[in-house]
Every structure is written in C-alpha cells, then in structure tokens.
Length: 278
Image (cartoon, rainbow, N blue to C red; front, top):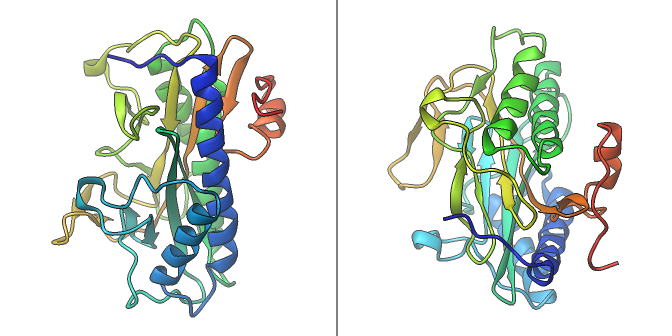
C-alpha cells in the first residue's frame, strides 16, 4: 500500500527534510583530505542533535552510524569508521536522514574531495544528479511511477558515453516511498522494467525518495562481509544523488532541498509547490 500524506504531514516531512539539508551542508564542508568518514558521521550527529531531531539511519536494521559514507567504488551503504581517511582525488557519496515528530527525510549527494579529479568523474556526478532532477520533474498528477523511472533512465541514456564506454545504472538498489517510515512502498527503479508494469498513479500526497546510482562501468554490485557496504563488481567508481519529494495539489515539493527545488525545477519548466513552512 502507498501511504498518502495530508498537507500537515507533508509540512512535518519538510521540517525533517530541512534537517537533512543542514546535514548535507555541514558534511560537504567537512569532506576534505585527511578527514575520516567517522569525522563526517560525528558532524552529522551534532547537526541532528542541534535541531532536536532523531536519526533514521542509526540502528536501522542494525546499521551502526548516522550517515552512509560511500567512497569511490562503494555505491551505497558505506559505514563510517576511523580507518577510512579521505584522500585528495576521492569522491564520496554522503547519504543522510532525519526524523521530526515521526516523519522522515532522506537525501544523498556526491562530493569531490580536494582537487585533480578526472573530467569523467565530474561528468558522472553531473549526469547522475541531472537524472535525479529529470525524475523529480516527472512527479506530477496523472503520471505513474514508471514515468519517473523512464525520465531517469532516458536522461542517462541520452548523454555522451564516458571514456570507460558506458554508464552503468545500478540495478539492485533504487528509490522508495517515504513518510512515517524511511523505506516504504513503492520501490522505484532507476530504469524501466516491463516486468514491473507502470506502477501506481501519482496523486497529491504521494511522497517518494528519488535516488539514481550510476557507475562508470557495470550495473552489477556485491555486498561486503559487513553486510552493508555495496561495491561495483568491476571496481569502477560511482555516483549517488537523492532527494525526497512530495506531490501536492500545486505540484512537486523537494522536501530535502533548501529552496524546495524551486530554482532547479524552474530550469526544467516546472513550477515547484509553495513551501508549507513559508
């Protein structure tokens, strides 16, 4: 069942989303050469505490940290620790979440550590982020879930191929419903699968976390012995971007973007919904 939210519940999710945005701002600034991924987790914990929120990652299925820190060929669910120290030239996906009054926010971004990154890494992150926004722009009344998947995959497939030969759209992980829980129905593929059909119709109150994950090679992944860390099978580096989005009567609201997604959606010819928090 897809959980449909009231306007009041979406406002609470917006509060949680702004806490996530604050975590992103603080951890982006802290992701520098010499910092450990545990240092970034400590930063996130402080932000959550300062906002009087709760972590939805810590303890989830036994996960031992507040954020996921996925470096280079780690696609998702990397566990912060003291041993993983960021180096100049690394890329890192930071996935963060928060709970306010029982309502969840969840978002991720890819950061560049230091300088000297190959152009294809910048392009990988750009393509992944822009595919996310293409998916967000497809969150409108009358569409179905597959229209989001189609927009994400279509954007990626239209881009010039990288030097490695292709972009791998990760197959085993995708977006998800969000609201009174962090992970809810429906599961959102970042590509179109005829086996999955068209999915539910998008109606006001529908909330979804849109999170493409793309590598410079394979779409295949494996999980390490810690039962969390996901790596690409061929060792190619990957990018991960995510926002939580609510569909309202006035259009999409990007719950985890500071401006509610207004500026970026305007570039795509879409008007963002008014911010319920003003």
